[in-house]
Amino acid sequence: NRSLLSKFFKSLDDGIADHLDPPLHPSLDPQKVLSGNFAPVGELPPTDCKIVEGSIPSSLRGAYIRNGPNPQFVPRGPYHLFDGDGMLHVLTIDGGKQEAVFCSRFVTTNKYDAEREAGYAYFFSAFTALNGFLPYMARTLVVLFRFLAGDFDIHRGFGAANTSLFHFAGKLFALVESDLPYEVELTPDGDVITLSRHDSFGGPFRVMTAHPKIDPDSGEAFAFRQCFKFPFLVYFRIDPRGNKQPEVPITSLKDFSLIHDFAITQNYAIFPDTQIVVRPGNVLKSQPLITVDSGKSPRLGILPRNAEDDEGICWVEVPGFNMVHAVNAWEEDGGDTIVVVATNVEGLEKALLEMDSSRGSIDMIRINVKEKTARWTPLSTSNLEYAVINNRYVGRKNRYVYAGIGAPMPKISGVVKLDLLKLTDAYSAGDCTAARRLFKQGCYGGEPYFVARDPNDTQNDEDDGYVLSYIHDENIGESSFIIMDAKSPELDVLATVKLPRRVPYGFHGIFV
Image (cartoon, rainbow, N blue to C red; front, side, top):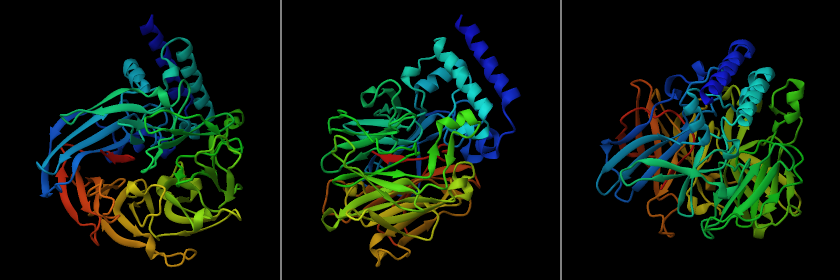
C-alpha cells in the first residue's frame, strides 16, 4: 500500500528531525534562512504590471527570467540557502506597446513532483552534512530505502533546477549542477511551463554544470559534469544543433574540487581547482562532506577546447585565487597569454556557512602558457559578485563588466560597471569602476543582466544596451523590475515596473 509506505517513510524522517538532528546552525535553520525576502512564495499566473517610472525602451521585446530556490515545503531539518525548488520569475516586456506581464512558476522536477505527492520535503543536499554526520547518513539511508521500495525513481534525478537558465539550440533550460537541465517553455500569454528533464545531455545518474558556455560565433556550447568517484571532472561539447559530443574525462585532476563554473576562450576551456573540496571518505570519519583544504594551492587547468582527451591539459598554480564564477577569458600575444576575469572568494572558510562574512573580489589573472606561471590583480576594492558581460564577447577580449555589490552577501545593494581599460598596469592593483548605482536604503537586488540595444548589430559599442534587475524594497515589502542605461555614468534608470507581488532573492537570470 503506497499510502502506508509513505507514512512509514515520513515517520522515519520525523524521527531523524526529532532525535538525531543537533541544534541547527543559524545558516542551516530554515526558520532563519527562509525569513524576510528569502521566504518562499506561491505560484502566480500571468499578471499585468504597471510601469511606474519612465518607459521601456522600444528595442526591448522579450522575457527576463530569473531562477532561484523557493521550497514548496519548508523542511523540518537543516536547509541551506542553495537548496529549495527552482522557481522561475518571468517578466515579459514589450517596449513598443509599453506592456509588461509577470508570472512565477515552479520548475516541476522529479524532486518537486515526488515531494508534492508526499506532502513534505525530504530530499536534501550535501550542504546539510555541515550540521552533523549521523543525521545526514540517516537521511541518506531513508532516501535509498525509498528508491528500493519504488517510492520514487532515482534514475530521473533529484536536483532542484534552481540556479540558472540556458538558451541554446532553440530551447530554454533551467539548470542546477546536481542534475541534468530541465527544458521549459514560454507561452504567448507570458506563462512558463516545464516540459521534461533533458536526458540528451547525460542519462541516468548524470549531472551537468549550471554554467555552460556558448561560443557566439560557432554556436557550440561547452559544459562539464562532476562525479563523486574518479574521474571527478568530465568535460564535453554540444554542437549547435544540440547534439552532445564524446566526453573527455579529466584524469589529471586527482582531487574532488568543487567546481561551480569555468571559462572558455576561442581555443581553450579553463577550469578552477579550488580549496573547496568534497571528501566522500569523510562520512566514515564523522566529518563534513564539503570542507576547505587550506593547505592546498589553487590552480587553473587549461585544456584545448576541442580536445579528445586530457593529455594536453596544463595546470597552473594561482595561490590565493579561489574562483567561484567566471566572468570571461580570452587569449593575447598569439595565444601565449591567457587572461581570465573571475570572482575570487575571500574568507573561504566562512563562505559555506557564514556567507555574509565572506567577500567577493573580481580579479584579472594573466597566465603565461609557456612558463606555466600566473599573476593576478583585483579590479575593484568593492565586495562584488554575480558579474556579467555582453554575451557577444564570450571567449573574446572585452572591456566592460557589470556586477552586484554585496551588502553584504547574499544581498546586493547596487550595481557597478567596470572598465577593464582603466587597469593601466596589468600587474598592479587598481579600481576599474566606471559607473555605480546604489539602490535606496533598504532596497536590494540580485544579479544584473546586460542586454544589447541591438544584438544583431556587431558594430555597436560593447556597452550600448541595458542592465536589468529585480529589486526588492524591504521598507514596504514590494518588488520591482528596473532597466538601467548601461552607457550612462550613473547607470541611470530608464524604466521601473512595479511587480504584482514580491520576488524572493535568488540566483542567475537571462533575457530571451
